[in-house]
Length: 393
Image (cartoon, rainbow, N blue to C red):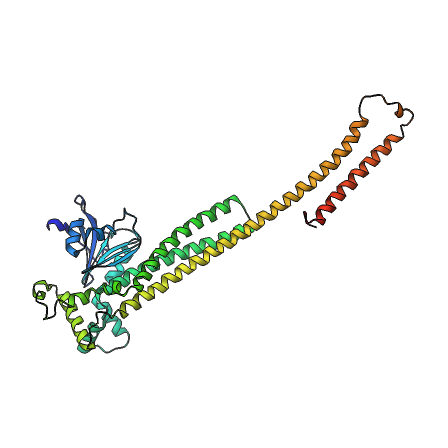
């Protein structure tokens, strides 16, 4: 196949477990899902990808897992470049190119794309709602179904929102019991456990915030949303007014069918719908609300962690105050005993005193009075400290 590498068909019965051959230098593993929902594993280098979907190298660089790019949804002339966490895809009007299809988190996305992009899924949904089957209904189903690029984009958004919501639920399940246990018992083990959970929450919050910001930015710009209408762009050159339409017109039957549907829809509405972005706006708003709800859960968890930290700090301050009170009592007792020791040291000097002769009975009074003075002094110090509020009552 020249510069486009070579193709490994995917057996639907065997999933994505097919083994890849040795890749050429500089090639990457991609999976192509076409309009009928058939999947094909490709080994393509960046030049083949750029030529196939007609995007620039700077757009393809966004999908490089070795580079740290934020979540991005870019609308180009003939493709949508999608970088949402582990989902790195290029969506055109009739096919989806998904990078690294054998990764654990990407395999469910591929399976969901195959299921949702199949034309039979839309017809099955219509018949499941109780509509009669027939030629007119089939044509109505073909007319009313969303464009291929929107269905692929919806699968990607649904997968990433569900993935982040599941990670948030797992984090909540582990965090709340750990915080309650830390509240009841402050220990090094519990503190280290909460520290790890808080770090995981911070990283997850940043990931969710990036996806939310990208959706919000896209919703705020009508021009960016209009760039995502790839089928509408394909219908424009098919107009008889365009002189170059005959040379550009694609040969794919699915694309021709999509262009004819878009053309008929514009005739039915009786107005140009280049600025009509209501369908895409409703799609993006739905997933924006979902990712915003996930972010609110993480915000609530962060507030709970902050409240727990405040409670722990209050407990530690209380213990610290108790230690200070104990230190005050011990210091007061030491001062009083030092006075008593001073009297004992004076009388214990090995120096002859004439006034001690025949006055042995005074010894017991000195001991008693010194002890009473020390005790009264200790009580006075403690009473003064409580009066000033230095110790609790």
